[in-house]
Image (cartoon, rainbow over all chains, first blue to last red; front, side):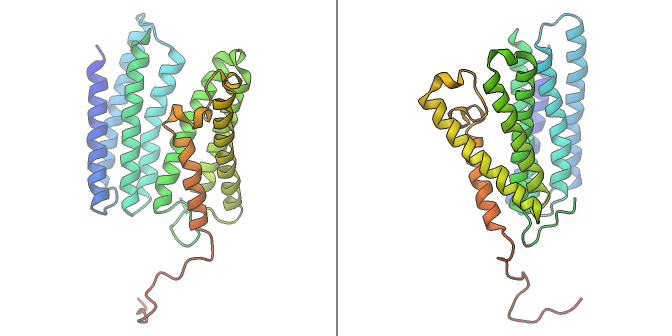
Length: 118
Length: 151
């Protein structure tokens, strides 16, 4: 049921990573609009938290500490990385955003496995 | 942030990426080891406490590199990155030669295999970067030939 939310998050992350990679290749730093993109990813993560919380309360069996630890990490990663990337005004700024987005995508994959594991 | 890229700075340019990867590894290692210590410490106390120690070293390295690597922070960064390099090699060799020592995986087991070998590669890139950005090695960035006009 929550699969669309994972797919959406991964799709947004990959899109954001691609956008940042394109900027890195063109020797450009992160722009504000890309931070809004990161904000969109965050919005999906918050939605995931709400839905997961509701489903867990309704009895979905999941390793709580593991799942919430991963989700919290994923949610914290992008804002911190975005600030860190935005302060740098070279192409490495875009590389940072690209790496951070791909990491969140990877965390989403792990979250999906943890969610369905039990 | 105060870490303006310049001579001797470790947090700017390529250093931005290095600190990012360090930060992600620090996050991952801290989260995982905290979870292990909190939920199943009695299963393999040595391995999990070693993981926690390794995670702490990654956190220190991340902060020291992000601080720009000036003065004392540069020394801290050297120490932290060296500890990681030695740790991943020693634990990596031990975990292959004497596998029964590390029944439960740590960050450094099998040379950081569980983390895509990032723990093996990262300290050596870190050492190179600290060496590359060592103070007193950078010539002024402005062109030496023609005198630059004052703005």
